[in-house]
Image 1: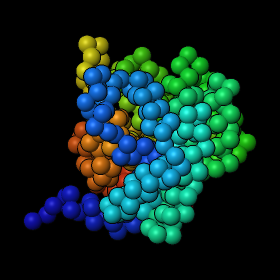
Image 2: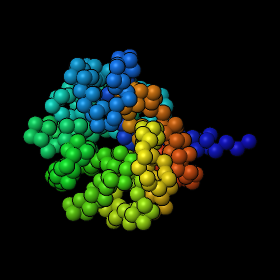
Image 3: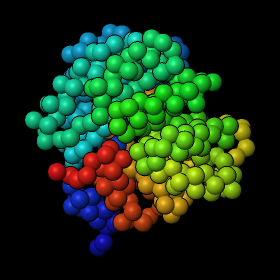
Image 4: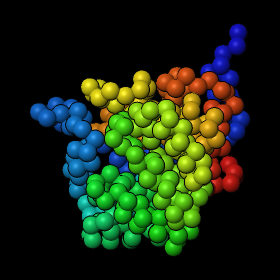
Length: 329
């Protein structure tokens, strides 16, 4: 009997294995019993609250602890057949240089012991507009492979946040990955802002949007125009479906949709999409195990997108492209 899941798994392995194009390995396995039993329930907090709650782990984590968490995640990914991966690493006043120093060590560990290519991006949870946060962002640029951003961390100054990132990209000739549209609401138009900024800075084809959950909450006409703009900007995407399928219920009216990057519309529109795991066993996703086959399965089922050849690209070669890698070698 023909089993499509087995078939696609074999095709992915034939391409060299999964590419995990977005993760946060420095916080992997950091969820605690206290996070479950806390009166406030840290794991049940809103997204922006969690951006601050992770400071407790970051304050206490030494370079060695960070190294242990990152390498544990890398070993798990290796066991699941991942050969190339990217992790955002906290680079801010709270983490200091401990997380990035550990991640640099983990790169060598991954190459030598796991035969994996492990790339780094800077996570800017404290933003980049604030003077102190900007210092740590700029300090990280020489160490990371990809410039990372989170415009929502500079709420009200998202455009300035993006400008700072893209200016750095121009100066360093590095690719950029930016978290956008994470709240699953039509009030968000960060993807549109990002695409216009990419064109303004002349960085077409060098920037990747991560998540893009709110896109599907917009009317169809807006989505269609947005996709055209994204194509013009050469904007690619990374979908992390299990990280967002739990988007909270609201009473805000919107088109019926899943809280997952809408690849069923994006791919036919000519937009390249890759796949990521996002958080692993932390307060954001306490039960997530980083299994890329699970991510692919949730992505295809939630968007009703069954084109096997395209799904294989999402899981493999598209990931290489958004990471700026030419091949599996």
